[in-house]
Length: 142
Image 1 (cartoon, rainbow, N blue to C red):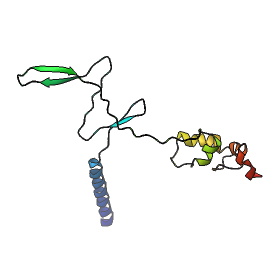
Image 2: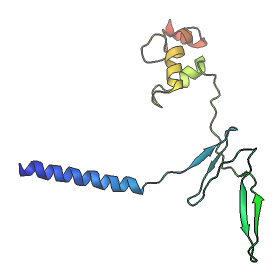
Image 3: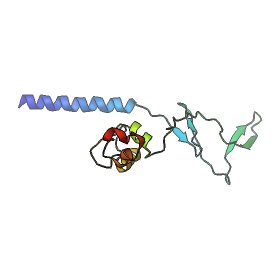
């Protein structure tokens, strides 16, 4: 009985410590734009959203206690990281040869590979698959 209580206390202690570790973890805020560019907010940076028909104003307080409101210009800074582009058309023979099944988990590419490349459902691309059999590499199947 004492061993079970000790195990339970150790379990609670482990869960408590893990929760403290997860509280300390932080995540980056990344804004993705329609053109594919991105901007990553720095640690103490804030973001405010407005629409083109509704301007965002910045308050400027003068030494003589006058207050001016000026229109905030849209933020144009980006830290875009260019993504590598696959030179092959998705579902083509070359794409099927180079794609590594399940390397990214279950994705749209994986489903496409299953649908267009692995037509004999054996889990690999090669002889017996329609796209392979209709390609220039089909001679190895004979």
